[in-house]
Image 1 (tube, rainbow, N blue to C red):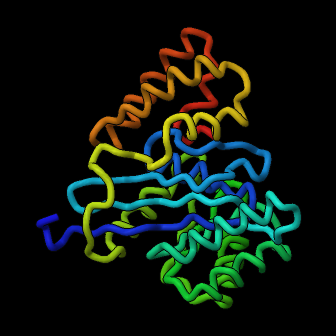
Image 2: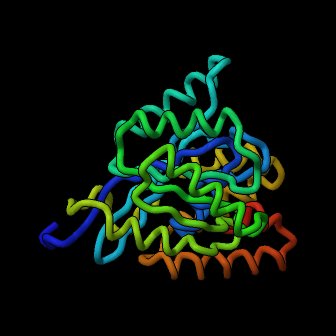
Image 3: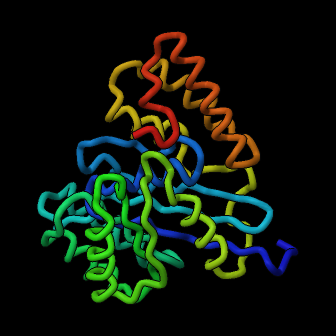
Length: 250
């Protein structure tokens, strides 16, 4: 990359199960690349979403929900979280602001604090919480960790998400291209489909065809969103289960 002002880096999305990490990742990338479900532990693999423009490239690492590992599968999923933390430039700690604080939330805070990585706090689902409760939650978390910034968002409707993106674009260090400009994930199409299929068992053949079209990405995030929305409207007319594949829909 010849532009000395080009910024790039890896950003880990860390949080408790069902905090909204996959929903946020899908919104930021502009396409459905991670499974979204009300059932915890939907994400089993690290799915990297890639956002590129003329100023920089951000590589997002989605991780399984953080929890104290018990079963072998859970231990493997937690190993993926630790690997992600060690390999990134910045951590986004995503917190579901609509649920009360428990031991799991304190476990996540300890995990991020022990990493020593630069991190930001993102409170999600703020449309379900009173403002005074949000401020108290943010204050308590910032007493535990010296976050460089705190954001309040709704990943479901996109409120505040662009502010997070703008901040990351300015904060990452100067660096090279890691992936081609038109690539939006390092996960193969079939792996993305497997992630989504765990939630959308119905219409798998239909979903595969739609996903292949979505993965043939447009060059900008805005155009990808517009293209995906146009496809969603077409599929509604055909009676497809479009809510399952619409970007940021869950």
